[in-house]
Amino acid sequence: MGITITNTYGNPHHVSDTNPAHVTSCDYYRLPLVGTIAPGNPGYEDMVDMLKENGHDTRPEGYGLIFLESEEFSATYFGSIEQIEQYKRENTDGRATFDASQGVMYAQWPHGKGWDDFLPRVFWNQAQRGGIADGVGLVTAFAHTVTTGAEVIVYEFEGKWLPDSEPQQLVTYHCTACHLDTFHDSGHVHENTGPSSRRWAARQARQHILSAHRHGARTNSACRPNNGEMLRVVNAVARDMWGTTGDALPDTDDAYCATKGPCSIIRELRAGVRPPVYRA
Image 1 (cartoon, rainbow, N blue to C red):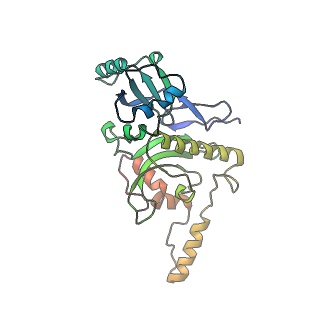
Image 2: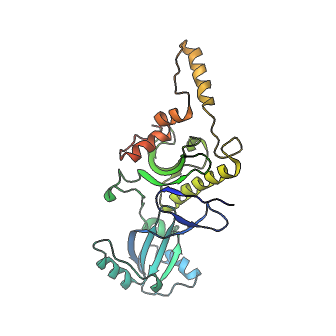
Image 3: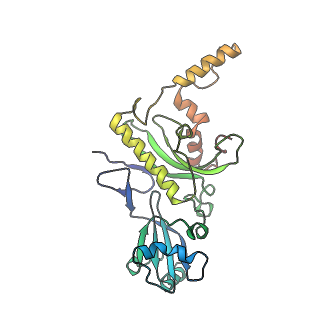
Protein backbone atom coordinates (compact mmCIF):
# COMPACT_ATOMS: atom_id res chain seq x y z
CA MET A 1 0.00 0.00 0.00
CA GLY A 2 3.05 2.23 0.23
CA ILE A 3 2.32 3.84 3.59
CA THR A 4 4.19 3.92 6.87
CA ILE A 5 2.18 4.91 9.94
CA THR A 6 4.42 6.83 12.33
CA ASN A 7 3.86 7.25 16.06
CA THR A 8 3.80 10.71 17.59
CA TYR A 9 3.10 9.25 21.04
CA GLY A 10 3.61 5.76 22.42
CA ASN A 11 5.77 2.89 21.23
CA PRO A 12 6.02 1.87 17.55
CA HIS A 13 4.61 -1.57 16.75
CA HIS A 14 5.33 -4.21 14.13
CA VAL A 15 2.60 -4.63 11.53
CA SER A 16 1.62 -7.04 8.79
CA ASP A 17 3.54 -6.71 5.53
CA THR A 18 0.26 -6.34 3.65
CA ASN A 19 -1.88 -4.39 6.14
CA PRO A 20 -0.43 -1.50 8.18
CA ALA A 21 -3.55 -1.50 10.36
CA HIS A 22 -2.88 -5.04 11.58
CA VAL A 23 -0.42 -5.00 14.49
CA THR A 24 1.50 -8.24 15.01
CA SER A 25 3.82 -7.49 17.94
CA CYS A 26 5.78 -4.91 19.90
CA ASP A 27 9.33 -4.73 21.24
CA TYR A 28 8.30 -3.35 24.64
CA TYR A 29 5.61 -4.64 26.97
CA ARG A 30 4.28 -4.02 30.42
CA LEU A 31 3.66 -7.02 32.64
CA PRO A 32 0.64 -5.77 34.59
CA LEU A 33 -0.56 -9.14 35.88
CA VAL A 34 1.26 -12.20 37.17
CA GLY A 35 -0.41 -15.20 38.77
CA THR A 36 -0.94 -18.94 38.91
CA ILE A 37 -3.77 -21.36 38.27
CA ALA A 38 -4.00 -24.95 39.47
CA PRO A 39 -6.48 -27.84 39.47
CA GLY A 40 -9.23 -27.09 41.93
CA ASN A 41 -9.27 -23.37 41.18
CA PRO A 42 -12.69 -22.10 40.01
CA GLY A 43 -12.99 -22.49 36.25
CA TYR A 44 -9.63 -24.23 35.88
CA GLU A 45 -10.80 -26.87 33.41
CA ASP A 46 -12.36 -24.23 31.18
CA MET A 47 -9.24 -22.07 31.40
CA VAL A 48 -6.89 -24.80 30.18
CA ASP A 49 -9.13 -25.82 27.27
CA MET A 50 -7.16 -23.51 24.99
CA LEU A 51 -3.96 -25.31 25.96
CA LYS A 52 -5.50 -28.74 25.38
CA GLU A 53 -6.75 -27.73 21.94
CA ASN A 54 -3.23 -26.76 20.93
CA GLY A 55 -1.40 -29.66 22.56
CA HIS A 56 0.14 -27.44 25.24
CA ASP A 57 -1.53 -28.83 28.37
CA THR A 58 1.67 -30.38 29.70
CA ARG A 59 1.70 -29.34 33.37
CA PRO A 60 -0.74 -31.35 35.52
CA GLU A 61 0.23 -29.30 38.59
CA GLY A 62 -1.01 -26.06 36.99
CA TYR A 63 0.49 -23.00 35.35
CA GLY A 64 2.25 -19.81 36.12
CA LEU A 65 0.91 -16.88 34.11
CA ILE A 66 2.34 -13.60 32.92
CA PHE A 67 0.08 -11.17 31.07
CA LEU A 68 1.88 -8.78 28.73
CA GLU A 69 0.44 -5.59 27.26
CA SER A 70 1.55 -2.79 24.97
CA GLU A 71 -0.52 0.10 23.65
CA GLU A 72 -1.81 -1.96 20.71
CA PHE A 73 -1.04 -5.59 21.50
CA SER A 74 -1.19 -8.14 24.28
CA ALA A 75 0.02 -11.66 24.99
CA THR A 76 -0.23 -14.35 27.66
CA TYR A 77 2.65 -16.52 28.81
CA PHE A 78 2.05 -19.97 30.31
CA GLY A 79 5.00 -21.40 32.24
CA SER A 80 5.61 -23.43 35.34
CA ILE A 81 4.32 -22.29 38.72
CA GLU A 82 7.89 -22.49 40.04
CA GLN A 83 9.17 -20.16 37.31
CA ILE A 84 6.52 -17.53 37.98
CA GLU A 85 6.97 -17.69 41.76
CA GLN A 86 10.70 -17.12 41.24
CA TYR A 87 9.96 -14.22 38.90
CA LYS A 88 7.71 -12.63 41.55
CA ARG A 89 10.44 -12.95 44.20
CA GLU A 90 13.03 -11.38 41.91
CA ASN A 91 10.78 -8.61 40.65
CA THR A 92 10.71 -6.48 43.80
CA ASP A 93 12.19 -3.54 41.87
CA GLY A 94 10.12 -4.14 38.73
CA ARG A 95 13.17 -5.03 36.62
CA ALA A 96 13.18 -8.82 36.63
CA THR A 97 13.03 -10.71 33.35
CA PHE A 98 11.73 -14.16 32.50
CA ASP A 99 12.76 -16.80 29.99
CA ALA A 100 9.83 -17.22 27.61
CA SER A 101 11.42 -20.30 26.05
CA GLN A 102 10.50 -22.29 29.17
CA GLY A 103 6.79 -22.07 28.38
CA VAL A 104 4.39 -21.07 25.64
CA MET A 105 3.17 -17.65 24.54
CA TYR A 106 -0.29 -16.88 23.15
CA ALA A 107 -1.26 -13.66 21.39
CA GLN A 108 -3.79 -11.58 23.34
CA TRP A 109 -5.29 -12.23 26.77
CA PRO A 110 -7.72 -15.14 27.03
CA HIS A 111 -11.40 -14.63 27.66
CA GLY A 112 -14.46 -16.75 28.22
CA LYS A 113 -15.47 -19.16 30.97
CA GLY A 114 -13.08 -19.04 33.90
CA TRP A 115 -10.96 -16.26 32.46
CA ASP A 116 -13.62 -13.55 32.67
CA ASP A 117 -13.86 -14.06 36.44
CA PHE A 118 -10.10 -14.48 36.91
CA LEU A 119 -8.83 -11.41 35.07
CA PRO A 120 -9.43 -7.97 36.62
CA ARG A 121 -10.19 -4.92 34.53
CA VAL A 122 -6.87 -3.32 33.60
CA PHE A 123 -6.46 0.15 32.12
CA TRP A 124 -3.47 1.48 30.20
CA ASN A 125 -3.43 4.68 32.27
CA GLN A 126 -3.29 3.91 35.98
CA ALA A 127 -3.14 6.24 38.96
CA GLN A 128 -0.60 3.98 40.69
CA ARG A 129 1.73 4.45 37.71
CA GLY A 130 1.43 8.23 37.79
CA GLY A 131 -1.63 8.53 35.57
CA ILE A 132 -4.31 11.17 36.02
CA ALA A 133 -6.77 8.46 37.07
CA ASP A 134 -7.45 4.84 36.19
CA GLY A 135 -8.62 4.70 32.59
CA VAL A 136 -8.03 8.39 31.88
CA GLY A 137 -5.22 9.42 29.55
CA LEU A 138 -3.57 9.07 26.17
CA VAL A 139 -2.75 5.60 24.84
CA THR A 140 -1.00 6.23 21.53
CA ALA A 141 -1.07 8.62 18.57
CA PHE A 142 -0.12 8.63 14.90
CA ALA A 143 0.89 11.30 12.43
CA HIS A 144 -1.73 12.03 9.78
CA THR A 145 -0.31 11.19 6.36
CA VAL A 146 -2.35 13.74 4.40
CA THR A 147 -2.84 16.78 6.64
CA THR A 148 0.49 18.13 7.86
CA GLY A 149 0.67 18.51 11.62
CA ALA A 150 -2.54 16.58 12.28
CA GLU A 151 -2.69 13.44 14.43
CA VAL A 152 -5.01 10.55 15.08
CA ILE A 153 -5.00 10.04 18.85
CA VAL A 154 -6.18 7.03 20.86
CA TYR A 155 -7.25 7.86 24.40
CA GLU A 156 -9.03 6.51 27.47
CA PHE A 157 -11.68 8.71 29.04
CA GLU A 158 -14.84 8.88 31.11
CA GLY A 159 -18.00 9.47 29.13
CA LYS A 160 -21.70 8.79 28.83
CA TRP A 161 -23.55 6.97 26.09
CA LEU A 162 -26.60 9.13 26.86
CA PRO A 163 -26.91 12.32 28.94
CA ASP A 164 -29.02 10.57 31.60
CA SER A 165 -26.87 7.40 31.76
CA GLU A 166 -24.08 6.56 34.20
CA PRO A 167 -20.48 7.52 33.34
CA GLN A 168 -18.48 4.72 31.74
CA GLN A 169 -14.79 3.97 31.20
CA LEU A 170 -14.41 4.31 27.42
CA VAL A 171 -11.71 4.31 24.75
CA THR A 172 -11.76 5.78 21.25
CA TYR A 173 -9.67 7.81 18.81
CA HIS A 174 -9.83 11.34 17.46
CA CYS A 175 -8.49 12.83 14.23
CA THR A 176 -7.35 16.45 14.43
CA ALA A 177 -7.63 16.80 10.65
CA CYS A 178 -11.37 16.17 10.33
CA HIS A 179 -12.51 16.53 13.99
CA LEU A 180 -15.32 14.02 13.50
CA ASP A 181 -16.74 12.86 16.84
CA THR A 182 -16.61 9.06 17.01
CA PHE A 183 -19.79 9.06 19.11
CA HIS A 184 -21.53 9.85 15.81
CA ASP A 185 -19.93 6.84 14.08
CA SER A 186 -21.37 3.56 15.36
CA GLY A 187 -18.82 1.08 16.68
CA HIS A 188 -15.95 3.53 17.13
CA VAL A 189 -16.32 4.15 20.87
CA HIS A 190 -15.66 1.11 23.05
CA GLU A 191 -16.17 0.13 26.65
CA ASN A 192 -12.64 0.07 28.03
CA THR A 193 -12.62 -3.46 29.38
CA GLY A 194 -8.99 -4.40 28.70
CA PRO A 195 -6.25 -4.68 26.08
CA SER A 196 -8.61 -5.90 23.36
CA SER A 197 -10.67 -2.69 23.60
CA ARG A 198 -7.60 -0.52 23.19
CA ARG A 199 -6.31 -2.73 20.38
CA TRP A 200 -9.55 -2.20 18.45
CA ALA A 201 -9.53 1.56 19.01
CA ALA A 202 -5.93 1.77 17.77
CA ARG A 203 -6.74 -0.44 14.78
CA GLN A 204 -9.61 1.86 13.84
CA ALA A 205 -7.29 4.86 14.20
CA ARG A 206 -4.88 3.20 11.78
CA GLN A 207 -7.73 2.40 9.38
CA HIS A 208 -8.78 6.06 9.51
CA ILE A 209 -5.28 7.06 8.40
CA LEU A 210 -5.27 4.44 5.64
CA SER A 211 -8.59 5.74 4.33
CA ALA A 212 -7.25 9.29 4.22
CA HIS A 213 -4.12 8.05 2.46
CA ARG A 214 -6.18 6.16 -0.11
CA HIS A 215 -8.98 8.67 -0.73
CA GLY A 216 -7.65 11.95 0.64
CA ALA A 217 -9.36 13.99 3.34
CA ARG A 218 -12.65 14.45 1.52
CA THR A 219 -16.20 13.16 1.13
CA ASN A 220 -15.58 9.51 0.20
CA SER A 221 -12.95 9.07 2.92
CA ALA A 222 -13.35 8.14 6.58
CA CYS A 223 -11.47 11.41 7.15
CA ARG A 224 -13.92 13.97 5.80
CA PRO A 225 -13.77 17.49 7.26
CA ASN A 226 -17.07 19.32 6.78
CA ASN A 227 -15.42 22.74 7.16
CA GLY A 228 -17.94 24.02 9.69
CA GLU A 229 -20.94 23.50 7.41
CA MET A 230 -23.18 22.04 10.12
CA LEU A 231 -22.10 24.68 12.63
CA ARG A 232 -23.08 27.45 10.23
CA VAL A 233 -26.49 25.84 9.75
CA VAL A 234 -27.04 25.62 13.52
CA ASN A 235 -25.92 29.21 14.00
CA ALA A 236 -28.27 30.43 11.26
CA VAL A 237 -31.23 28.60 12.81
CA ALA A 238 -30.33 29.96 16.26
CA ARG A 239 -30.18 33.54 14.97
CA ASP A 240 -33.61 33.16 13.38
CA MET A 241 -35.14 31.61 16.49
CA TRP A 242 -33.67 34.04 19.00
CA GLY A 243 -33.52 37.16 16.85
CA THR A 244 -29.82 37.63 17.56
CA THR A 245 -26.93 38.68 15.35
CA GLY A 246 -24.10 36.73 16.99
CA ASP A 247 -23.26 33.05 16.62
CA ALA A 248 -24.34 30.60 19.30
CA LEU A 249 -21.46 28.26 18.48
CA PRO A 250 -17.95 28.62 17.06
CA ASP A 251 -18.18 28.59 13.27
CA THR A 252 -15.21 26.30 12.55
CA ASP A 253 -14.81 22.62 13.40
CA ASP A 254 -11.45 23.04 15.10
CA ALA A 255 -12.73 25.87 17.31
CA TYR A 256 -15.85 23.92 18.28
CA CYS A 257 -13.84 20.76 18.95
CA ALA A 258 -11.37 22.69 21.10
CA THR A 259 -14.13 23.95 23.39
CA LYS A 260 -16.89 21.34 23.28
CA GLY A 261 -15.54 18.28 21.46
CA PRO A 262 -12.86 15.60 21.80
CA CYS A 263 -10.02 18.12 21.42
CA SER A 264 -11.13 19.70 24.70
CA ILE A 265 -10.68 16.30 26.38
CA ILE A 266 -7.32 15.61 24.75
CA ARG A 267 -6.01 19.06 25.72
CA GLU A 268 -6.73 18.32 29.37
CA LEU A 269 -5.19 14.86 29.15
CA ARG A 270 -1.99 16.29 27.71
CA ALA A 271 -1.89 18.84 30.51
CA GLY A 272 -2.24 16.09 33.12
CA VAL A 273 -5.68 17.28 34.19
CA ARG A 274 -8.71 15.02 34.66
CA PRO A 275 -11.32 16.19 32.14
CA PRO A 276 -15.01 16.37 32.97
CA VAL A 277 -17.14 13.40 31.98
CA TYR A 278 -17.73 13.70 28.24
CA ARG A 279 -21.34 14.18 27.13
CA ALA A 280 -22.47 14.61 30.74
